[in-house]
Image (cartoon, rainbow, N blue to C red; front, side):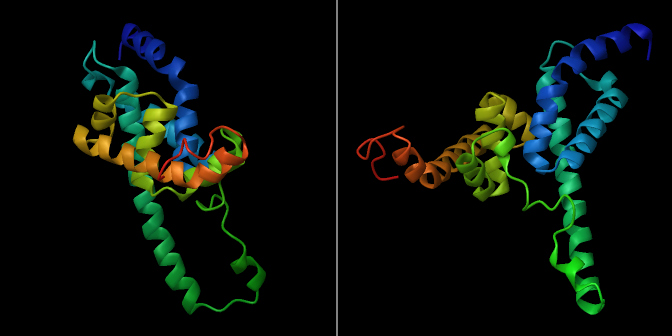
Length: 192
């Protein structure tokens, strides 16, 4: 790339680094995995920058690259974990203590305390992945339905449905927390 293209890329990409890292952390629930995902996203964006249509939404383009990278990473991790489970089941070790402790970066260990409160973090962790991703893109990263549909490569109707369902599940999980905190009264929540 020419130095002009490099300057354009840097001017578009670098201001989004904090947003991308925050989203990566929300997806991976692990600091090191999030850093790797951001780095991978920037490398792919740099490599394919010539494919980016000038005038379109660069932020949405980067988030789509990150989301696709995360899906690839998650699928590889799932396959690797499945292989490790079968290996560990057939291999006895004297280090039983090590088996009981979760591996570093275990997806279940992270919660969103750094970004949200404890209750909200737990509620987000309870959401199925496909709902959580849409809620994070919409409510945390403030993408519009059309942008989310493009990032996730799915119809807008699917985005709207997942967002509605994800918010409903979150509302159920957070009902007692909101009541106890005085955020809502008992009649405001209705049948949720």
